[in-house]
Length: 420
Ligand SMILES: Cc1cc2nc3c(=O)[nH]c(=O)nc-3n(C[C@H](O)[C@H](O)[C@H](O)COP(=O)(O)OP(=O)(O)OC[C@H]3O[C@@H](n4cnc5c(N)ncnc54)[C@H](O)[C@@H]3O)c2cc1C
Image 1 (cartoon, protein in one colour):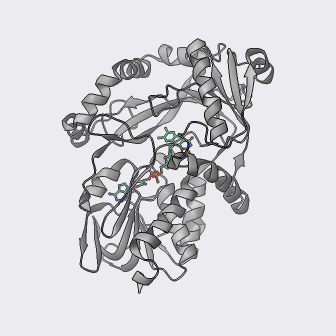
Image 2: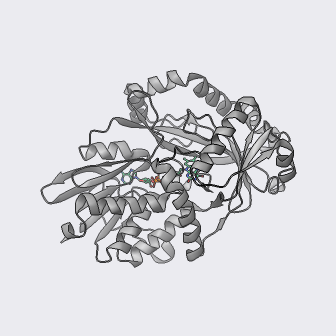
Image 3: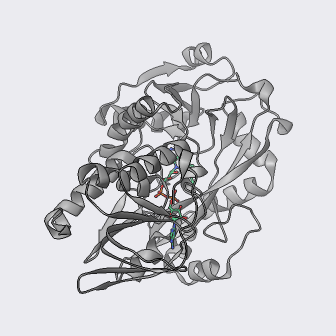
């Protein structure tokens, strides 16, 4: 349960409860959804169930903290729709809750001909997505950021930074103030439908609710299958390794500095990120991890690894992107390779500037034919909704994703009539 100041404690194991809605997952998507369900239906009996002892322990607490403006996403996709609204909503939420956010702007820097041509495409996409990008030649770029070099760049002023765990905890406070309950230390081990509702079994207790909204991040596919959904995806974990620059380099850049991404891949490339707290991180790369929560290189889970090996999508994805996979693995092991990626646009960086910083693991849904799913993916069961793919920019887009899930509850499950 969330106590004073947003700290979380486990509920006594013997108790059971009867809720209208159980939200599984104490990341930013779960809490955004829970908060908006309570705001919309103030008499709703709602319980959030989280397996860790705190909130935002996985992707939400291990990311770059960037408020994305909506540059990269295919017009009409859920990502494009939700990112822009999410960015505005995130800044507004931070203002109204006294949380840190800074609209520092972002530069995407092209360093060769191929990247320049891809940057031209990205410029068009920004415009199609309703942004107001500014094209800079190499000189203008260097004037704006004296430590950065490139052939050309685009500037997006509305990108910024925030603290997503703090946002999640503020959402959690709103949930408990609205009468909702948050159970931590409760790992969902089984879920199934019964005639009048859904049974959620945790390692501590059996919970019954009318409906469930499942926002399980790295475990999303397993939780969907528990509910009997036949989803043709598997979550593959991609570790994103970061470094932190020394405090003396806190003023190295005043914008976020990104490379031009490969449009085939769902990753943005190693970037320089100004963090709330004043320091700068470098990263993340994207290395296939040997465990879904494999934050360290040697961390291995035999269950996760066996599932990955058996899943045809893993082999097909790796075959299709073998060069990229090998390159990322090499650069993960050899810091010099990692450094070379950053030196393309920030040539003054040297090896000992790269100091340790915790990694994150991305939950990337991949189809059995090896295609990574780029867009957000939400699947519907008889009495449950499942967020099956919510990669970046889902932290930025958490408010509109939550609003969308509330709307789905109204349309698919006939809220509020079905609650009585
Ligand atoms: C390295 C990295 C960098 C990123 N950078 C950015 C960025 O700069 N900007 C941005 O917008 N997005 C970014 N993202 C993406 C963003 O962090 C995620 O999209 C977002 O946090 C997803 O939130 P979530 O709630 O779906 O998942 P999570 O935060 O992973 O939460 C899922 C929760 O479900 C819980 N859970 C799982 N299984 C069970 C179970 N069986 N029982 C109970 N609970 C369970 C987990 O413990 C977890 O707390 C980044 C992600 C990573 C990894």
